[in-house]
Image 1 (cartoon, rainbow, N blue to C red):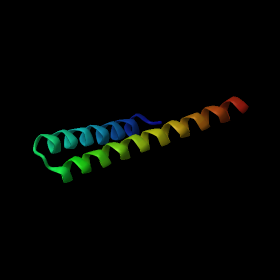
Image 2: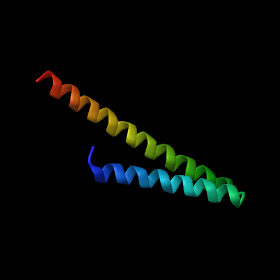
Image 3: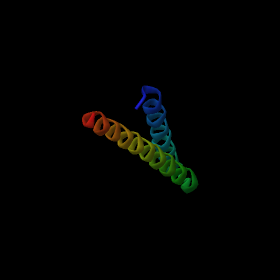
Image 4: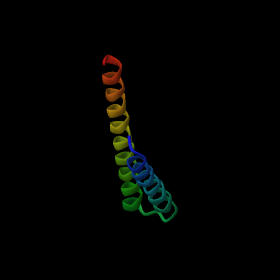
Length: 63
């Protein structure tokens, strides 16, 4: 996983957490839901990157 991909995923998760927090404090359910979705998307991308890394490591071990 490149550092830029990891940084983008972390930024997306942070943006989601911020939206959730602001949505909660302002009783804006739509903003809170957007934040939850952004955070979930960042988590999913991060998971995908970890899977790719593990597959690459397994391939390297077989060589």
